[in-house]
Amino acid sequence: MRTIAAALCALTLIATGAQAQTLKDFMAVVMKKWTAPFEPFQLIDNIYYVGTDGIAVYIIKTSQGLILMDTAMQQSTGMIKDNIAKLGFKEGDIKIILNTHAHLDHTGGFAEIKKETGAQLIAGERDKPLLEGGYYPGDENNADLAFTPVKVDRTVKEGDKVTLGDVTLTAHTTPGHSPGCTSWEITVKDGSQARNVLFFCSGTVALNRLVGRPTYPGIVDDYRSTFTKVKAMKVDVLLGPHPEVYAMQAKRAQMKDGAPNPFVKPGENATYLAGLEQDFDKQLAKQTAALQKAN
Image 1 (cartoon, one colour):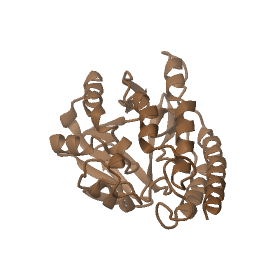
Image 2 (image 1 turned 180 degrees about the vertical axis):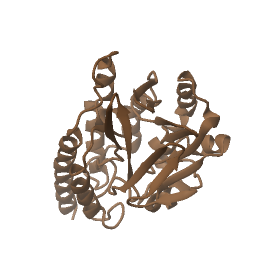
Image 3 (image 1 turned 45 degrees about the vertical axis):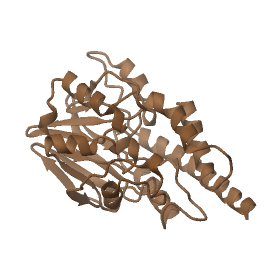
C-alpha cells in the first residue's frame, strides 16, 4: 500500500514536470498488485467482492439479476469473470453495470462484459464522453491511459436512483478524481440492523493536474466540494475503488462466523476523507510550487 501511495504522489509531480519519472515507471510499480488474484467473498449481505488484490470490483445480488460495480484492468477481465463464477453467479445474469469513474483501471472490462451480457451501463453524466472516447481527461492522446471505448446507456446526477428488483442505489456526484466521479449509496442488512454502505468513487489526486493547465476546469473546487459532502454523510460501511481505501485485506482476514462484520465501521469515511483532504492540500501546494519554479 505504501509503495502504491508513494507512486501516486510521485505521479502528481509528473504533471508539472517536477521530476523525470514516466507513466510507464508508475504502471510497472502498481501493475503487479493491480493484476494479482484475490479470492472472491461475500462482503456484507448482498454485496460480494470479485476484484483483484489491488483493484476493487463488486457484485450486488438482486431479485432480478446482478449489478456489477466497476471492472479492473482489461487483462484482468477473465479473472473477474472467474471470480463471479466461483461465487456461484452467472456472468449472463449481470443486468446493470455501474461505474464510479472513467479511468482505465476501473473500466478495462466494460466493453467485453457489456457485449457478452447486454447489460445497461450507467455512469456519471460528466464521465460519459470519457467512457465513450476511451481516454483520460486532459490527456486524450496518451495511449498509456487509454481503454476500449464503451457506450453509456444512462447517465446520472446527484440523487438519481438505480433500481433492479429489490435493490435501489442512490447516485452522489463526487467530482475531482474525474469530472463525473460518482459514489453509490445502498442500504443493506447486517443481522437485524440496517447499514448504510457507500461505494466511494475516489478522492486522490493521482495523475491529475491541479494548477497551470488543470486536468479539467474547476477541478480544485470539485475536490473541495466532494470532501465536504462525503465527510458529512452517515456511512456504516465504507467501500472504495481500491482495497487500501478501506483496509479490505485486513478486514477480510478478521471475518469469522458469529462475529461482528469488520467492514461495519461507522465514522470511518469521515476519518478517511479528512486524510484525503490533507493530502490534497499538500499536493496542491507541491504542484503550485513546482509551477512557480518552472516559470
